[in-house]
Length: 93
Image (cartoon, rainbow, N blue to C red):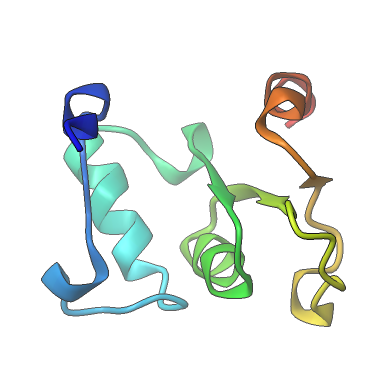
């Protein structure tokens, strides 16, 4: 698709030893970027995404495009329904 030019790091689940919701997957990406969990926010669209962020100690935002019921395991995580809301949300994190 040619989208890789927009990203500094791409990490696919089949290329890492630790799968989400294990936070080590997220931490490996953060390390590749030269960032820290404290300076990172993860936007995820699944319970596994958000659970991995929580496990890694990273702030997170759940993007719920389908109007799904919120899993209890991610209570307290900010929720958006579309990416246009993301910029506002990131200011509050």
